[in-house]
Length: 153
Ligand SMILES: CC(C)(COP(=O)(O)OP(=O)(O)OC[C@H]1O[C@@H](n2cnc3c(N)ncnc32)[C@H](O)[C@@H]1OP(=O)(O)O)[C@@H](O)C(=O)NCCC(=O)NCCS
Image (cartoon, rainbow, N blue to C red; front, side):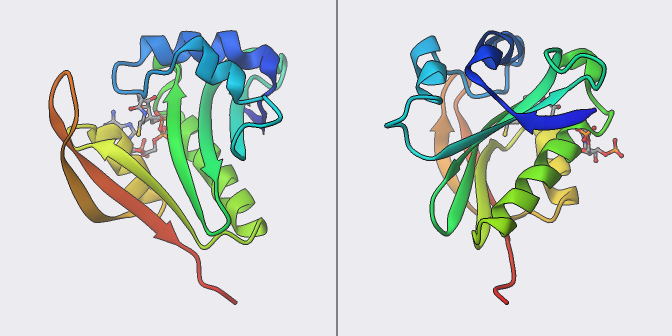
């Protein structure tokens, strides 16, 4: 599995994966197209793709990059490719890039019931630092706030 930066050509594949994943954040086409607009907030989108065909998208993660805190906004691995460490590889590469860029932490919100995502993040060093009551709709549910911080040298 190859982890690479997304390009505008990946938007249709990203949208297909996102629409198949109930627990993902759901964005409209404009929001995805805006990812690559010059005036957009700084974001990184990483793609997990087949080594033999880099256009075959198996998963993605999208992160908003502020100076200190990077925030994971969305992540999906294709249903048929789950439990193959693709999510792990995406997050490891994201953490590597965040550290290299001088960020001090990476944050995210996750539905309390999303045990797959919670376990993945916990395994990679994230821990709870709060909750937002009734943050999600359909169904209404609390968000857990997770974070991993890097030691400042
Ligand atoms: C969450 C998600 C991205 C995980 O991707 P993945 O590639 O399957 O994850 P990995 O194979 O790297 O799993 C790493 C670890 O996470 C945990 N994990 C992953 N899926 C799990 C599941 N269904 N149940 C319990 N633990 C799970 C396990 O500890 C796993 O390690 P193990 O397989 O050695 O036990 C994937 O399930 C997904 O796309 N879900 C739908 C979208 C979503 O919820 N996105 C997150 C929004 S915050």
